[in-house]
View (tube, rainbow, N blue to C red):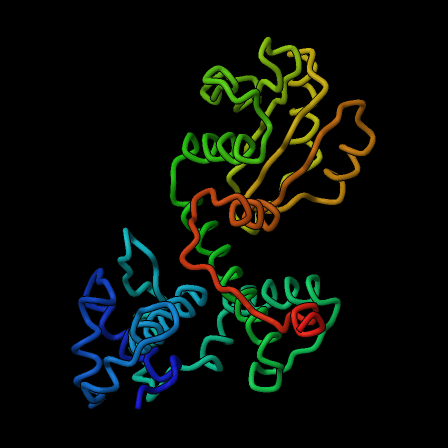
Length: 304
């Protein structure tokens, strides 16, 4: 029998305490120590991966959200200072209750809950076992996307500013905001850029332009009204009327009010909306699989 993903949290954290690893590096060792049979190791999920690999992956993912593990490369992760501190206490187990002691994990759960309530119009916190199969699928998808969104933000914050600026341009182009030519956009972000990080031409001649400002801030650093006033000033210098201000964090209420009072057409995109757009338009992520849910075709049976 393959244990649930929470049982794997402690052995995964211990394995990552010795340096950067991939799941494939330690899966056999963990399975051996837990006496998981060869038959159980071969059990497949609907995605084609093994159930063992899937559950170890979820253990890793949840500990990343709690800040106990850190992604350091392609598929690689390592224990953080918080993770090592927890191991120093010699815990007998690590589970979701343990992770709830960490603010970043609770913030992750809160984001997941908000997404679910927004999509369903309900604040129901039922476990998956209490939901209908179709509801469980949708809630699981929300959990997957919430985890992905957090990892996207983490990756962005570790990248350099130019990477983030280019990412925003590519996202807007993917959304259809360009004239579909090689000259349809320009990355302008550099020292002395006067507050403009990119420009997108919406027509071939470049008459209609969108100006972009991208601020790569941590969660505890919101974009202020002063930041927006500077952006409005930069738009004035360019004689521009359209702007998009994107941040990995959030906007203060004063910042939002500043935009409402401005004579410019400025769109604000915060960290949450940014990751949702990246997922929707497959920027920085890609589709792993497509699941089709079939239902009875009533017309077919009425025609027979």
